[in-house]
Length: 236
Image (cartoon, rainbow, N blue to C red; front, side, top):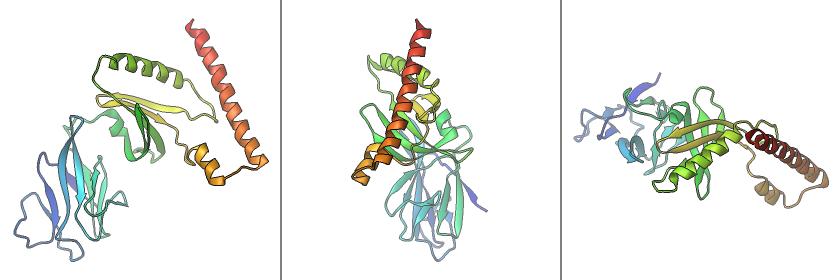
């Protein structure tokens, strides 16, 4: 059974072997011969005006978050209910304070890794905490400026159209979140990656493969064209 590790404001928590002269009341001391003297650090860091918890791995034999190794001298931002594992001998569940203001997106989803970045947005792989299902989330960062309001209005109009899209050949919008640090669009995940990369990997497609690709493309485009006409008609 995993213990609970709570975030501590502006302070550092360490995992160490017993007997260290630098241990403090904040330290979690583990009497295990297999862990490093200073195994990992937990500390707060300011990110976009919000205080987030960060774990830094100092060990030689590994600190894991949700079964993924962090890596020596590398850092990983912690999410609510992340599982921290030290080898197979110690497990901890990370918790933020109950009074911490957390945005609605992070309450429902956990960001895993970046998938790509454009001029206005960054796409991440995320997982829905309640179901474990994976999605792609596109995060549009909010930047202060005169044009920010018009960009946000345009984005909201685009979201309204995407919310009405539902077709098996089109990646559909699952959810949206308008948070202080940005607008999040949760989309269906294209687990096989981009079509272009698939074609490059194959070098060339057979006639049958090409036919299947174009049938799917035409089906999706036809739906989007008909859908856009319907949206234009109802908005007149």
